[in-house]
Length: 305
Image 1 (cartoon, rainbow, N blue to C red):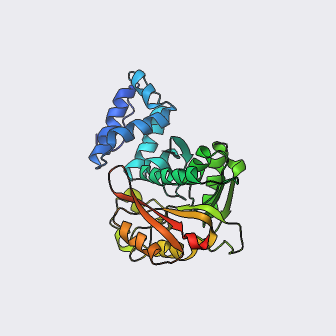
Image 2: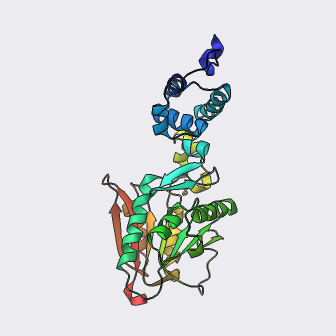
Image 3: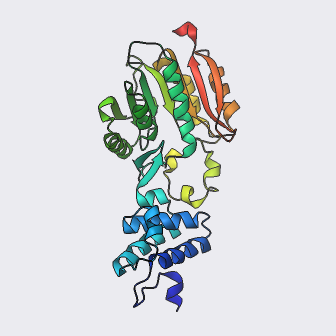
């Protein structure tokens, strides 16, 4: 009887899909997972190679022992608080599906605001040359690939300190048929760029910005599973913004701009870092759709163009 409380019972009569889902959702909810219903549906759909919509249609379908075991294996991973994206290996961003692994940060919906800001700047640019965009710390390539999909003539460059992340981003670029316009390479922020290298019209990034002392207080899905190097921004969370503010202007074309995602509480601090560097002109803080500070845009000073 005790075993029935910790694992899904495989009875002599084949369990129905709806019953298996109900059991799974109950166990997820008991473990304190707020998104128990959604997660249960996603995991069962993955185990059965179905869509969530098909689960509704097949609710009374009897399942085989192998199908039950596949669901149980996925469910146990989620009960250990492994994020759904790592379990399924997929995450949607900008209406595109990206492959993700534990080597990279899971793309978040709020980062789409950065993509929107970069696209707006790109459309305002007046030039006969292709737009050149550099994404620093590309991870899964979500930002870079999304920009490449939207800007059909742009040349996209993307770097990451992790060779595994670079390979994953390349795979996502191939999957979405933009690899021919993308150049991916390993590099630690701006350290791999030469001052004499080609310059860029846009430099975009979602850098690590969580204060070191805060990381251990985050939900286990983030704290225990996502790469700490993609989270930790130093004592005050501003380490990478300082570096970018100090150096990025060197790699910008005339009228070029830096576009960065920020923590909602950091808007004024990040903006101030750029305002204190004479190499930048206009600096703006953009809000997300919840009215929270989400993106800082710093344009290269006109006198340097």
